[in-house]
Amino acid sequence: MDRLDKITVGAIVVLVAVSGWMIGNAEIATRRQAQLAQNTEEAQDPFVAQMELDKKIYHEVQVSIEQGSFEQGMEKLQEIIKQHPERPMSFVYMARLSLKQGRLKEAIHNYREAIDKNPDYLDNHTPLFIGKEINAAVVEGREKFGREQRLKPNDSQVGEALKEVYYLQRRLLGGCE
View 1: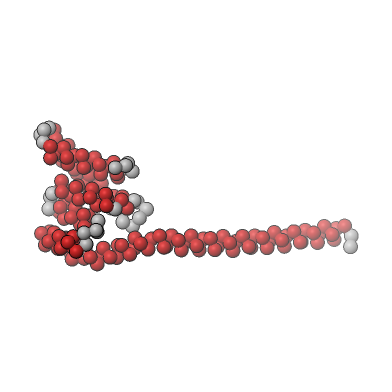
View 2: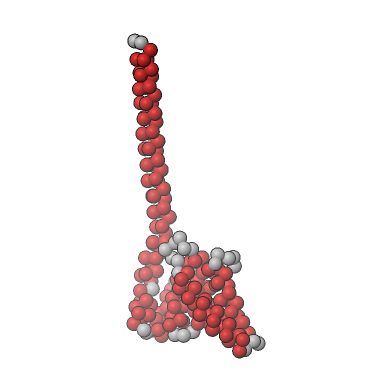
């Protein structure tokens, strides 16, 4: 065996070793990606389970809202709150009903209660995100209550409403409580 044959055999051995190493790393990377996908799926499961439960609990309220029966929806919501006082989604539905009935101050207050109880409503990376809905109420509240404060500068109720609007605005922008 001459020198060229030895170099060729050495090169083939190196290529086989490098190929084996690359295949092994590809398998490890595939396993890591599968594990990451599974972890992501498992992380979403609590949100999915929570959303499914909320859908069941608040179905009648949602139907009432869609039919325009806001008083009936509020009555059903009060029953749900008695049965499930720990559910922050109650405050979201109460805010929605208040908005439909033209009670912006109540809606703002209920959105605040909802996000205080479950900050995931403002997390854009969760399926619970309702930031756009809250932002629409904040924009409307800033305009309405700002105008009212200019007309009635000593009205404490208007001042309280504006504080809650500004609080929601800070939270929407990622600020602290």
